Length: 523
Image (cartoon, rainbow, N blue to C red; front, side):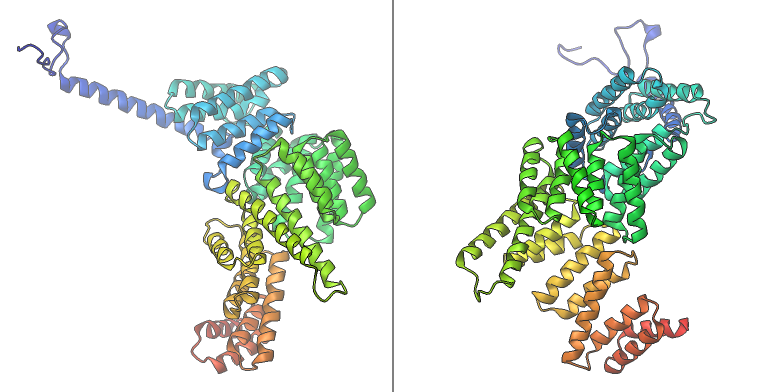
């Protein structure tokens, strides 16, 4: 063999002849190990799928902004928003896993485990099952199968100790409650699921303050964002919030929500009392300051609201929600100025007021732009930003913003309604494109979720169609729009009449013909 020539790879010549292994044998041994490893991994996977933890609750990465979620979890840890920090660390670990930071996820889970060990020595099994499940999943993804198996065994042992009929799951209020909180924090589309989880937790533990608090917030947000409010629903939410405050009078965030609900129901004196009490108890809690700011903005005091928001933003400078609230305050100040001008005796507003208005618009745009940068899935901020671009006569930017948000996937029904309603108004009043405006009002109306946005789409569609007919009594588009509106409302004869008039003017229009046929067949 020449100097420097590599040894033959067919065999290990440094070992005794009887111990030398051929390349083919080594390949077979390696393949065997891989097969065994795959079998083990498959077995682990079957066990993992049976667990109750963040990895099996269907919380999808594309439904939330992970950076924002992480920021909010750090805020909760820093400011002690909840006494049960293990739940916060668990959700933080899941967010880190979704970002591919599994080593950091393990660190968060270790903090969750330490918190439980320190604060829940008497009921450690009950409090630890979700954390154990998360540990096993993260180790599984790290391909550390022995560690994953260790935590699977911990879950199994805990279920046995709690007399569960299932090997890897057990019905506990703690598990339902933690799932409810995770859904509530993850994204708006999970609020209904959060409500169901808290209901199940309360069936097992009716007087637990944390589950009552969570259930009240879930209902409050559902009717605040996704469902049409009624007198009955307002009364139910009010009672849920009162009960949550009674069970945990130290919880000032739920106290502030009760104050906002009372304000909404025009019970102003009691609303003020609760808000003052909450601010006295925790004057430097960012979440509370945010709700207090909303309270004063709704009261018509945007300057007081801005003071509170600036205090909050100093505590949590990366909060997109706070920037959105600040933008809304500047918008409110702008609206107040316009209203004052409207009722002023002056024919033309002073030049200084125009300068002030421009400053308010610039400030609102600045903060709304920060929101969509920090919270790119916060749909309402996009429509607020687009409408403010309109105020600034920046129509190209408004169009770009509306187009961008309309192209987004996974909009909730109400988000879609809200965007189509606002874009329709923009098209009608600023682009003077009435036919396109009708198309977007109809898009919002076709989503049958009964709420304010759908109601306004109907109001705008009817008003615009009637205005078009006043100008031109032979406008097929207007008759077709009214026919569609009547069709969705189940007003069959009115729909037939409108579709027939539309078809007299446009005989080959397939949309009108289809609508007419559907209505006639339904009689």
